Length: 418
Ligand SMILES: Cc1ncc(COP(=O)(O)O)c(C=O)c1O
Image (cartoon, rainbow, N blue to C red; front, side):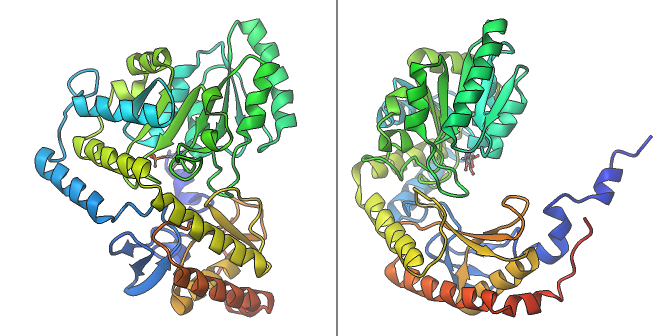
C-alpha cells in the first residue's frame, strides 16, 4: 500500500510544478499599499490591473470610515454563532431586505463567502432525483457545488444554446424517470474571458422545458444593468432568474455574498443550507460595510459611469492597436497573445519591471496550450494616463514577443517535469 503523501511528493499539480520559478512573483505576489489604480509590488509602484474593485470603493474615504467605525462598535466577533442559533441581528435582516430590493427579488439571504455559499446553495436546491445542467466553463465554486450532487448532471458547451437544448432533452428524459426537476446554472459574466452568459436565450428555453435557473453574477453585480443590478437587468430577464447570486468580493470590495429569490425559496434555504446552518454568521463589520457600499452603488451612479468610461477607453484602445480581446461583453478585459509559458513569464516580468504594469497572467491548463492571456480589470479608480501608459506598454511587449526577444530570454527557464 502507498503512503497517502506519495502522490504529493511526486506530483505538485499543474500550477504547483512551476512553484520554484513562479512563487512570490507570478503566484502569491504581494501587492502592497491602499487598494487603488497604483499599488506597490516589490518596492516599486505599478499600475494595478488585477483587482476586482470595479467601482473603486475599496479605499474610498467614506467606506473606510464606516468600516473603521463598525470595527470600533462591534469588533470582529459579533455576532457569535450561526444565524439560526445566536448569530442573527436586525442589521443582517436590513441588509438582506436592501439587497433583495436592489436586485428586484422578494427576499435575500447572506452568505459568508461566495465560494462556499454557492456550493451550498446548489447542494440545497437539488435532491438526488433532480438533474443539473451547467455551462462547461463554470467557475470552480459551481463545479464543486455540482460535485456534491448525488443525481445526474450534464454540462453544455460554453454559452452554446444548441448544446444546452440538447442537454435539456437528456435532462428531461432522466427527470421524467426519476420524478425530479431540472436546475440550469450559468454565470452572469464569465470572469476569465468576460463574456456574459446568454441569459436571455437560456430564459427563452423555459417556453420549451421546465427548469429553474441559478445565475452566479459575481462580475455582473454592480457593473451591468441600468442600476447596476447585474447581467439579468442588463439583458432584461432578471425576473426569470429563479435564484440570483452575487458576491461582495468584487464591486462591493469586501467579503461575503448573497442569494436572492422568491421568499419561499429563500426561507427553504435559510432552514436547510448547510454552509449557513453550521457556520458562524457574517460578522457585523462586514454587514455594516456592505450596507454602506450598497448605498453608494445605489445612489451614486458616477462610480459605474467612471468604470465604463475606463472600460471603453481601454478596450477600444486595445482593439484599435490590433489586440485580440476576444468576445468580452463586460469590464473583464482579456488580451490574447501567442507564446509558451516560459515566454509568458519573461514577458510579464518585463511588463512589471520595465513598464510598471501589473496584470494577471493566465496560461495552460486554464486556456489552450500556446496562448497567453493577460487579464486586465479596469476599475473606476483608473484614469486616462494609466490607460495610455498601458496601451503603449502592450504595443511594445507585443513587438518583442513577435520578434522572438522573449523566446531567446526564456530558453534559460527550466521546464518542470510533467
Ligand atoms: C464567478 C464567481 N463566483 C463566485 C466567486 C466566489 O466568491 P467569493 O470570493 O466571495 O468566495 C468568485 C470569486 O472569485 C467568482 O468569480
